[in-house]
Image 1 (cartoon, rainbow, N blue to C red):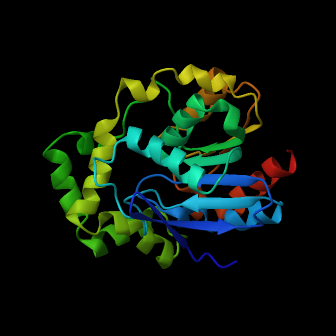
Image 2: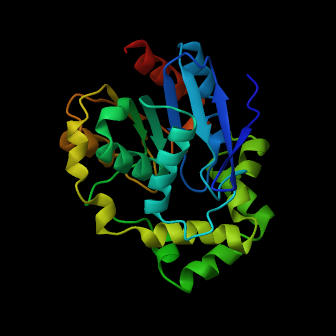
Length: 274
């Protein structure tokens, strides 16, 4: 399936996105995390389309081939983006598939717009107040130290080598697209803005997730080094008692590109059950 990206303009800023499937089919919005792009879903989108749905995956502003906001790239601004993006595409109700920061943004948005969510697939992401940032995130959140860490990512070859060790199965095109958010000082600031904007208001009212009485599938890598797989079960315990939880053995954080053959049947099962 051709994963060529389309382009739209929101507030005079280019937004790249993948849009596959029939326009008349129920839409599925896929939101990636850090430092990813819509190509995170390269192996997943064909499964969604073959299940009879329309898959729409934007490069979040500042990531992939989308231009960053003029203003600081806070989680609140990304919530606003989800509203603007879906309005421009005239998508009222949709299925939501999220990963990493795409989950924090998407789940927070879903808390505010529960009537617009048809079903959920959540992977390696949590709004739990119990979560504590992983070591790299803590550095990013610390002014000065975060900038020093980010400048090391200016060495593309070093970053690519590290990512290939973490995700040896990811192809070069995907990693190149992921790297776009790191290739300039201005782009790297997007990640620092986002992590530093995280506050108690982000997880405030997270219990509202329980009002989403829709089918939910929770997918997680057993060896996720950033968000422990215990949070997969906590998400079910505190928010989605009816959810199906699948913790994938011998998988890390980037499950969709690391072990796509294990993820795809679970995605297909979710959409076949609707």
